[in-house]
Picture 1 (cartoon, helix red, strand yellow):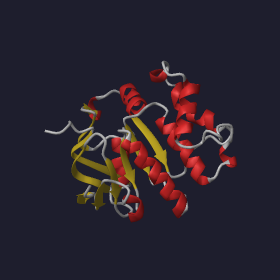
Picture 2 (cartoon, helix red, strand yellow):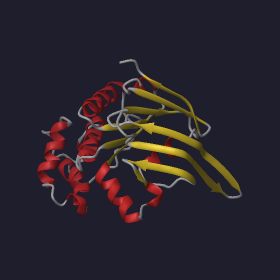
Picture 3 (cartoon, helix red, strand yellow):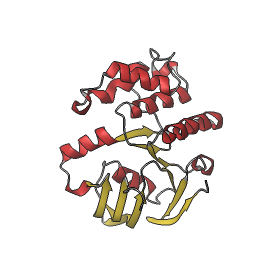
Picture 4 (tube, helix red, strand yellow):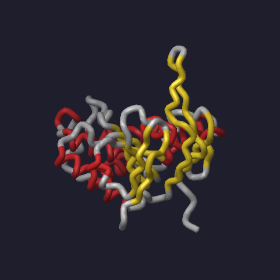
Length: 231
């Protein structure tokens, strides 16, 4: 038997009520992701991929079924415990970087380390370490407006790494970048994955998904296909 799943969805549904209509975003998903996997989640707009990402990230709760992270059922956790799990286990990377414009790179990366769970970490040293890791050791004092799009995304990745997460959730991380910069960012994620971090990537770009070991395609709230790349 292999290791226990780091992420598990058990018959997960998600229904949104919009006026007098009900939108079935997920329709009974069963899914397991092993520790250390690099998984791309794909599908057209409205297929359920972003809804699943929000559930994995403990940002939302399923309508029915159960979502587990490292064996912990999210539906049974109190809000404070969910916040602690996000802070302790998950790192988030978004399409639009979400950096504070008036803070420099070092200050942006230190931001998640302000929370109680990370009081034992030397925030300044850890932020410097993460910026060095993503190749921005010479840009620590630069604000976002002084950085290229690719450099801003590297700052965002460094920020996601600051709390030493086991899982990185990347939602269209190359969506605002050109082709060459996108490939550079994906190579960085591959390197981080090789260090043992589980990476879940949402993308609509097949060339980006090719960097992942596994591709899961969603359509109409269901898993349409689940394929692993031959190693």
